[in-house]
Length: 342
Image 1 (spheres, rainbow, N blue to C red):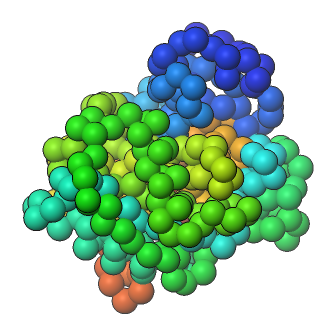
Image 2 (image 1 turned 180 degrees about the vertical axis):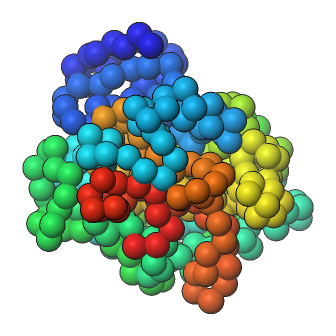
């Protein structure tokens, strides 16, 4: 694989429209770019996105990397493969008290939700806070030195309180763009911040906006290049974190339908759970927790079909949802691995 390294400040001035890459967590200030990375620059003038690979991409990448890549052997790893703190972006590395806002964007949602994704998302996001599944995020923190692997009580940890889903909004007064770009999602996230009154300084420091598009209204590349992605944008309200969440069942098996026999709608909660956990631990990519290949807490455990860390149904708030495992640096005596409970 051919790797190219640039000073971090140089990337903002690159004139390339599409650039794929992976941030190097162990060396803050540099970026390693490779064609298979999950950290990618997809629109000129926009910050990087962290993509959720499709089932086929993730499993192919894991097989190609064997025990040595950022995905590595399913379920396990070594300290050199752990998540490492990247120093934060504007002082923010993790969400210490996560506040999630769900935005169902566009009039395309009107009487048009064949898989019932809106209700599933509202229920799942309203149930996951305080769970043992999501508790894995609490071992990661901010206000520690770049290069930190174990917080061990230092800094301020990522939060896992109940009631993370603060509110939701059907922004359906007009149509969303037919194939929305990253900048369109960024603008919608800022619009949502305004709608919910999160306009004061610091009001978005532990907040994420899940921008969900209706069936047939997904951004280009969905289901082939990714299942979802998260990023952030700058605004007069501060940096604003958001997820581009397509209508997951439109992609079928490539984004989780019937994965591990978990049902036709399994991908909805597997993918959004992945994105939520990643935003909590790397709110403004890539200043939070990533491994040396640029993979985040969800990427390292995506689409595991058997053995340690395999995706499964878990109980959250009295309901059962399909989820993937999340990477724990602390697992297996500090060797690290993918876990469904912490």
